[in-house]
Amino acid sequence: MRILILQQFLPHYRVPIFNQLSASNNIDLTVAHGDAFQMHNPAIQFKQVLLTFRKTNKFFTAKPSVKLLAEQYDIVIVSANIRILSFLRLGWVRARPFKLILWGPGVTVGRGFDVPNGFDWLRYRYARRADAMLFYTSYPIEKYAAKGLPREKLFVAHNTVELPSRFLFDNSIVKTSFLFLGTLYRDKRLDILLHAFAMKASQLPPSVCINIVGDGPMRKEWIEMSNTLGIGGRVHFHGKIEDSVKQEPFFESAFACISPGQAGLSVLQSMAYGIPFITSRDAITGGERLNIIDGNNSIFFDGTAQALADKLVTVIENQEQTRQMAFNAFQYYQENCSIENMLSGFLKAIVYVS
Image 1 (cartoon, rainbow, N blue to C red):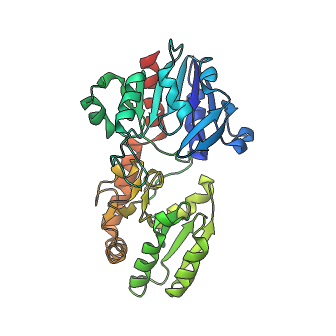
Image 2: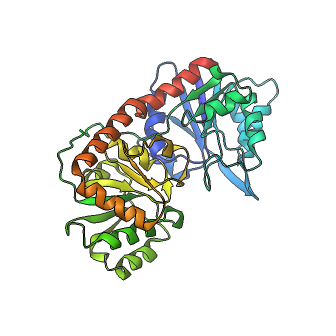
Image 3: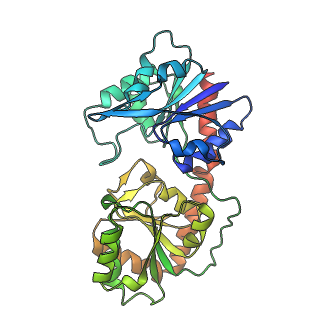
C-alpha cells in the first residue's frame, strides 16, 4: 500500500513512529510536511515531500497541490487541522481515488481543551467525509458517536513518545531535583514553579534543585526571576536538549517533572521514564493531560504557587508514596501509551480502510 501522511510540521518525536510504520509489511510510506531541515535527517527511513505553507488570516494553504499529490496514493492520513484549507479540501474531492484517515485530537486544543469555538460543526462534517478517524486519546469517541459517526470507523493511536530502548526502570535511584522540560514561553507558567520553590526552599534539602531543559523567549526573564527570588544557585538552565539519551540523566534524578501551564507530550515522556508529572488542572493540553490519574501516577494542583509549593514538599517528604507513583506512571505508559500502542492504532485504521 502506498500511504501518504500530511502534516504542517515534522517534529523530531514523530520520526520513530513513522519509521516503524514504514517498516511494517506491505507499506510504502511518504510523509509530506513543511520542515525543510528534516529533509536531510539521516534518522529518517521513509520518503519525504517538502510542502510550503502560506498563511492568510488564521488559515493555511500548501504548495505543491496537495490534491494532486494525494491522488498518487492508496491511503492518505491527514492532520485534521481545519485551519489548513489544503488538507480540509481533501474531504470534498469528487470520485476520490484514495482512502482518507483524519488524525488528531478530535476537539479544540490550545487555549482550552474541548472548548466550543464555533467550528465544531465543520469538524464533524469533515469527519463524515473521511473513511476513518484516528484520535490522540479515546476522549472524542463518545462525542463523535453521539453525532452519528459509526464507532467502527473511530480509532485511537495514543499520542506518545519513544522510550529509549536501553532504559530500565529503577526505583532505587536517589532523587535530587525537579525537572522542567520544554520550550520556555509564557504559557508554560514556569514562574509559578519558581515562586513555589522559593516559598519552600528553606524546608527542602539543600541538594534539591530545579533542572530546566529547554530554551525560548522567556529564558532571560526567568533566569532573572530565579535570582531575584534568591534561588538562582539552585535553578539550572541547561538549554535545548532533544537527544533522549542526553535527557535521560535529568529524568533519572527527578522526583517529578513539572509544567504548571501546559501538559503536552512531556506527560507521556515523564511516565515513560517512571517519573510523576505535576501540572495544573486547567493546563493547556492536546489531550495528554487525560492520562493523569491524580495521586496515582501523577499530580494535579489548583494552579497557584502556594498549592504547588505544598506539593513539592509532599513529594519529597512522602518518599514511599512518590516511589509508588513513579512505578504506577511507568506501568501506565507500558500498558497504554507505548510507541507500540500508537503504531497498533495506526495499523488498525489502515486495515479498516483498506
